[in-house]
Amino acid sequence: MASFQSGGLSIAYDDIGAGAAGCVMLVHGFATNRAENWRRLGWYGAFERQGYRIVALDLRGHGESDKPHEPDAYAGDVMVGDVIALMDHLKLTRADLMGYSMGSHLALRLAQAHPERVTNLILGGVGARVLHPAPVGADGMTMAQALRADDPAIITDPTLRGFRQFAENQGEDRKALAACSEARGDRLGAEELARLNVPTLVVAGSLDEIAGDPQVLADAIPGAKSISLPACDHFTAIPHALFKAAVFDFLEGWEEF
Image (cartoon, rainbow, N blue to C red):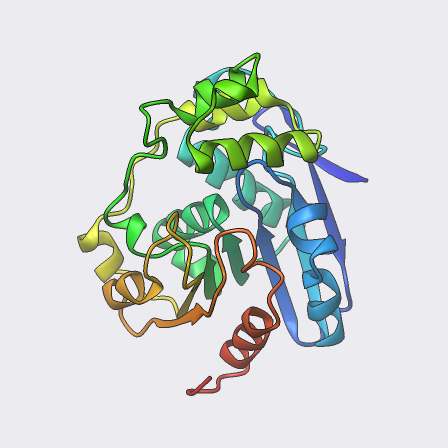
């Protein structure tokens, strides 16, 4: 395992592939890690076959990275700073940047604050909810409460129950994830999105109620394209072959998918 220091924490990462086609930076979603989100679901292999250098980190609080239990440690700018710090550590001036779910929110913030570091931006598992967020728990329970609950049987909301089960299946630190979910970061509004000047692809499943319609987000970003993956929800979209095909069509400059 490779690691580096960012903000006093050890951050784990992978750096693999020759890079003849370029370099892609991968930023995973909430309650998962680089091995699950990207390696196991076939993204490492797909990018390697296309000749890309792959850089992927475990975000703080996840995977093999350090896991503080204080919400302040997960402020949005701090987590974006970890991604920039890894690029600096590896002397990457710029890269294609791909996120999923929470990783897409961080990728958006990075592209808005540091557009010179991003060649192309790929946002998976997000859509209209970036602009029009909805409460996570229909029953009033928060994500943090669901993650800290001693008895998961008290979690009635299916989304919260799914994230709790997923975190346990991955062996993640639930207290660290609860702190991460409580962190406050400013959301990008329509005005900031309209100023984004990076080629962008937005991808989400047609059944993904967590993300919402990807076209709505794409419409808010100048020149952005979108793909809706048929019959996919937030979790089944990630490994989908059409997702991978859309990403490589986008990176290779095809106008139509």
